[in-house]
Length: 362
Image (cartoon, rainbow, N blue to C red; front, side, top):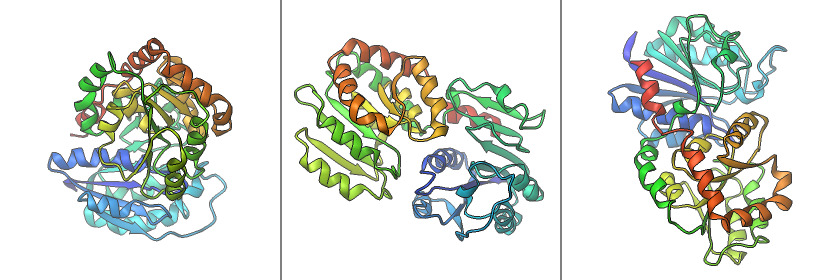
């Protein structure tokens, strides 16, 4: 066992988005800063971020994308794997046998205890990052950063001696979010409501961004309003959105491959975003949000944040044309409502979740 080595098994794709990989990258960068050596095992799905991981200085072992039948009792998200669990474990065996990591980190809805057990001879300890509480794991630590998640939800799924860390105070955010938190919260005390940030995830495969921009074009917005739409570098709709933005009467900037997201959020007054991993980034900076639920697994996040009055929720893309113009207009002309949302959001997480998790991995 090499106590300096940590291996991550995580994927990004057009189907599953980029959130799982990005939160693992946040943890890997923090571990690397402590002198750990981080390696990634990623399948070559369409829309993968393997080159991006390499640009960040991490070693990546690509797994060939294969299609195969899934056992009847596979996890609900089994098709996201690109093969069976047994096939995936077989690909990973030689890699892990060579590296002998102290920690294996798994963030994948399509993997469960069968994959973990098959590879157990080749790692010392296992961290599972999850949001679903719907399948068994043989892990030493489990992290679920969902607001309001009860650790008892995992009692049927993990060993009795597993350390279960739940709640948004464990959200894995890059250090710049905590660093910009004081500035972001202070500017919201006096800043006029003008800048709208649209961010629907790294892929946005159904083009929710386009629907939002079309809806905002019909909304009554304050004079001097500005819209910034953030797209992932692998988004299939990037060129379409750029053309659409050029036709809007409200000045609209389209940005892709953003490296200063924390600063952009801190300088924004209202966000319209998906209920994914960026939810915690917006909360850390006290950025009030209109949240659009794009997938079933985002429902609990949206409901939890709405319950503490940190966001306003649209149940799905079908509500964008009718509800978004009115809701956005109302909020931008009522600073007191937005201020209360900001305070509530800031109370959800302080951006120190990565540091808290590192304490359990040392």
